[in-house]
Amino acid sequence: MSRRRIKPEELELWQQVARTAQRLRPETPGRVSPLPPEPMIRNPRSAPPTPRLEDFQIGQRALGTPPTHDLLPGLSERVATVPVQMDKKAFQRMKRGKLLPEAKIDLHGMTMDRAHPALTGFILRSHAAGLRLVLVVTGKGKDRDTGGPIPVRHGVLRHNVPQWLRMPPLAPLVLQITEAHLKHGGGGAYYVYLRRQK
Image (cartoon, rainbow, N blue to C red; front, side):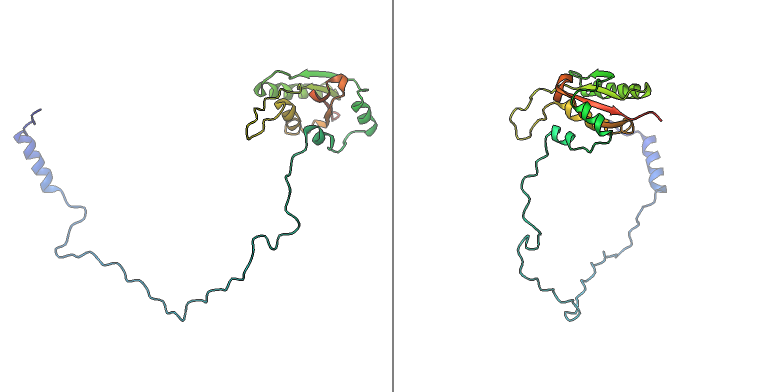
């Protein structure tokens, strides 16, 4: 590929531009780049004394014995240890399956994306209707743990529903959450006792 020749009018235009151009950093003749500043030499007498470190062992001042494995208790134990907020007699009747739920929602088989809004809508509607005891069925969940280094939770909805019920907008409406009696689903369902309407 041959180079194109410059036309005379292009050369004349370039020379006009070159004559009017000014350098951004004009060089002065004989200018020498400055030397770097000399490092400051400190007077050894003015330097602070180096502190002497005492001999130590890691953990020598730690209090108590080292912690053992802190395993999170099972879901049933965690739900059962929540303090009773409702009437104690009604709570005992509910735990024994003597109180009948006034409404029920079955989240079993739903994905998390569908289950969360469905639960939220159900609790809001139930509270607005003046209901007190509702049943939320989650299912016990399938064991999907493949034996890898990180354990997989057994029953994702079963673990998430109590958490969702303790978050806004549902938390102010919920008085008590507990596992259902065997005749209402046992570990695969929750009794949710709602607060009275104000």
